[in-house]
Image (cartoon, rainbow, N blue to C red; front, top):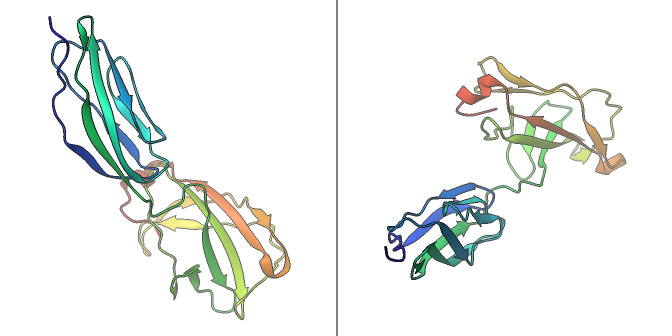
Length: 196
């Protein structure tokens, strides 16, 4: 038997920072192990199968040297370009939402004011909100003991998720925000297309 030969792949693009990534290379001559040099941080190779997986932590284009190995030697390196784009969200950050206590209207910070705030999510995601109550454009420090919210697929649909009312108060006076976290895990969320 000869050393493995990796089936050619030119590039892997269109993944984003924080997005789960899986790539399974193939090779002839029964490789028993694999190596990859130059993987983006957050991705790793399973040496026995060659499977590359994980979630990249930094955007960029990475030229990865992939090798398959068996008892007769190692393949020539196959250079695979892996493109990781910047993310539209920061997984370690709270989405800032303001509620105008005079009108009841909601806005995402930097967005338009409306009757509802629209966020996109799917089953398994964590929804992390930093809620501010605004009056006259100024954040208010309110005596809040319970803070609940509901999530619906569409305005007239039934409730998919309702929070337990737990929150963490951050800041005081005109810098007061209330942080709430929800895991979108209930079964009904799995069938929802858009969450409001």
